[in-house]
Image (tube, rainbow, N blue to C red; front, side, top):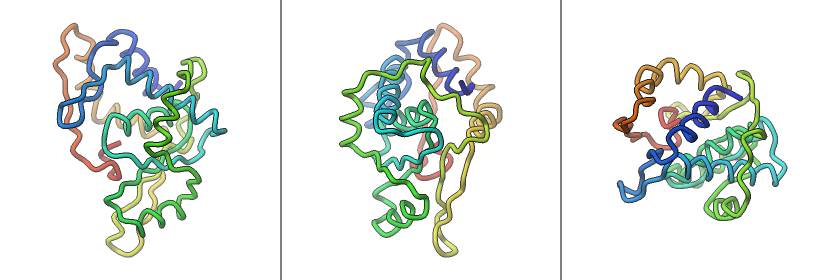
Length: 192
């Protein structure tokens, strides 16, 4: 299991009632236990549809807990994701889907179906290696057509080491004082 998923598993077990995601302008709060359950249901759903390592799943949901849970479910399944947003416009979305080769668009309808699945057990989470395809983010297209930037699962290790490790270590304390605001659009690499 990649360290990123192992960390989620540990936090979910050690601090199940801590807040994982706060969205809808602070009106909705999702605990780590809930978040882990939701993302495991997404992974299970993708498996029932026949998805395997490095298969591309386009995610077309509003920026929300559901979006983040689908991203995590894709990771648990060892698949790769392509973020898309209505803000991109129809023409750009069509280009991204065609160019990436994503054959599946995970939207609200699929979210509802995924929540009917049993959660994928942790023992069945994918054991992706650092060179497996993780996601494709498309550039703004300011110099012409948007281009896909391919990232491997190894990027999660670098993100944790480079940006989060020093900040997250205090999360192992009894209080629950750490919060991060994610203001980036889902189609921007900083969101990931």
